[in-house]
Image (tube, rainbow, N blue to C red; front, side, top):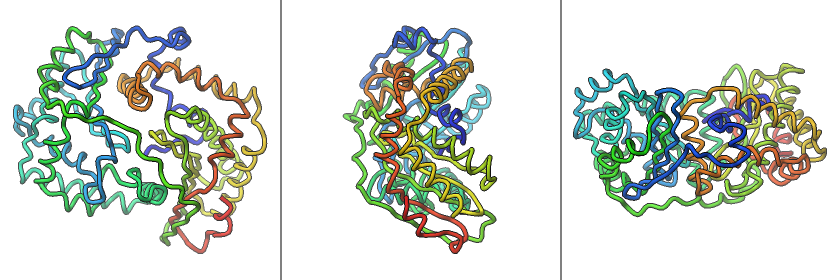
Length: 442
């Protein structure tokens, strides 16, 4: 899980940095003439041509994320895609290794709650060859039993290591606690138990039933035009079965109220993470809550870390999903003092409108920052994909700047009151160092 930065500016950057591809004039006009879309056998393709250099990013977004999973199949898509690295129909294992080494481009796999990214960044001269490898791994992985077992062993070892590492563990437990009975409570990467139990037959069935064109969104950003890209997609991913997949918003999580899970661990510091439920990506409050959490993150950084030196890491994270969540996170040797400060700062955000000029500086500083920085084609691809998946139209990505600028101090106070309550906390550390009475105030 991504950890949002501790200052207001850095907290916002993680969500909007990919907008660098819009010039200020383009953002104001809410148009992007460099970007277009087309359909190949049910596969939606978004292409943004950027001729500034020869770098091309191509990301396939396998839609559904944890909605595809059950408790027993957590991590199955990640497992399948990792196993495809061991060979496919056109690229048996040794040939695949040789081609990948020669082309110098690694295909990355990034599972998340709403989709899995299967993508690559390469240069124009090698793009066709790299894309052919990517497509064949998706369409026809060999899934040799011996190779699958080697992949399984590695993934199980990684999952076990994550369960023994406080930060990944507290994140995993917090999601599970906040989303009981909801897909977001599943691990897209898998658990030790699920990865051990998924059979080769289940992997093959998942490949046959789920790798269909209608479940994929392809976003390409770089120095390539449609006349080149479309035939390439037609003769590769376009040959997949069309299928009848249609992405939809996950069902809203149940209102579960406050909760606390404590795991007594002999750690040098204590870890505390709690979430509350936020709005859907369709809701105007989505961007308002993003700003509110950034404001809170900045205040906590000042009060907890800078002034009192109670923590090396404190945050008010915003989980950028189809259904947002906000929260509180800290590692500290004094959780009670830290909780007291957090409670004061949330109360202040809920009672007192923030300074208008301060809010404008916060948003303006960030917008200036991201317009001046060179962000990657891959970041641009994901920003377009997010708008297409969450809002139904990639062109709505250009509304983001205006949405941020429209946020008012009263909006921030209102969403703080509406959402920042009923936290569900996970605590790892010395159990006798935590006051349950303080937790109950959240």
